[in-house]
Amino acid sequence: MKKSTGIVSIAILLVLNGLLFKIALDKNLDLVEVPVAKVKIEPRTKIKEEMIETVKMPRVSLNEDCAMSKKDIIGKISEIEGIIPKGSMFYTSMLFDESELPDYPALKLKEGQNVFSLASDLMKSSGNSLVNNQKVDIYVTIQQKKENPVTDLLLSSVRILNVLDKKGVDMRVSELNVPSVINLAVNSDDLVLLKKASEMGRIDLFATSYPQEEECKLNEESAILPFLYE
Image (cartoon, rainbow, N blue to C red; front, side, top):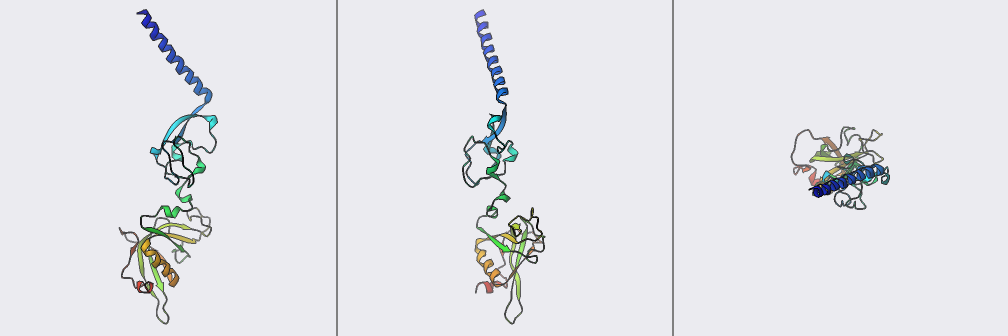
């Protein structure tokens, strides 16, 4: 009985010594919780919470570029070049907001859509009233020789991807007051029509004032179509 008690006591002491050693080691190393990749993350991936786990690492092994919080990582886009390996730390220089990416508009496209970039002026953009993700109706005006101009709706409920100033800066953060380019999400089949419309006439955008389920709907009865199909 005494022998068994002695063995249990020794085991308890070993466990306690192990715990004390770990506590002392952790204190000396100054371990901190750091988010790392739970799985391999491919380039240009939107990072989700399930892709992240936390581990303890010595503070001395970290630098200012290391992301220290999950909230600084979730929803970010990984760098276009380079994989984030499983177990790797996240570096802020490799993480981007969608709107910071040069090809950001393309990331917002739905299947079967393309970006149509429209050089804007105050008339085309309705002043500064049009904003990202807003829906607009596209009207086209074509001037005829010796006849009155023809104006009609061509596409309805077209989504604005973003509005940029002349420096390519999103108007949400631009220091300028005049938009220069409006990027629109249009169906691939309608892209040729819009390009031809921009060459033959004038394009005006008007905020959609009514709900419409279908995005970028072609007005098949538009008086403009005969000109565009010539």
